[in-house]
Image (cartoon, rainbow, N blue to C red):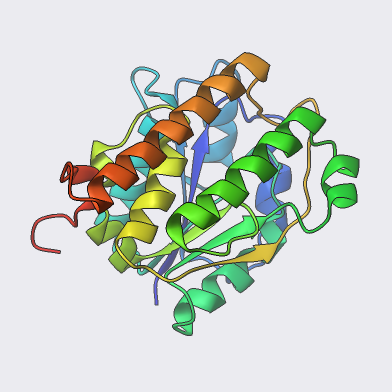
Length: 247
């Protein structure tokens, strides 16, 4: 199976090389970095490291960046796509384990779970309010969808090609709620989801949204859940939760 790693990047010059070094050799056939108009030397470093580098002409946002990542990966024939943030917040050494669960047919969609224990998450630098929001929303979202994921708010993800060819992610937001829309779409369409433990890493160079943006993100997540419920009850056949045509 062809494995492609995608990296949605914005101002990742200080952490990109460390992230790349952690990816075990032979794990991926190609690494694609999509730069969302960084103001530092991310693009130059990416090219120097030999990565396939795609540069946006204008900033498209976190969700918009992922859309480019997935389009490029599918266009290049990926069977498994792994998204790794190049800010070193997630442990890229675990990439073979994410891929293996998909290659062996155990899961269609795998996430990294940073909340193995409360102590571990907080000692890794996760702000307490983020930990609290994460736990509350994760419990609610598991109940809402019938899933049993350890965390619904992880940016370390791996997908089978079928997931990306079925879910209408092109219709999703260009903002941070893209990730939550994608998860609820996968649950609604019956894909097998699972997770593996991964350390929480919060430090100054790692990207992180502030309290105000976190509140907006949380409210946007609740809005997605209301949309899911309306769709499930037949009140509104939302195209977000229907498979792509021809899928």
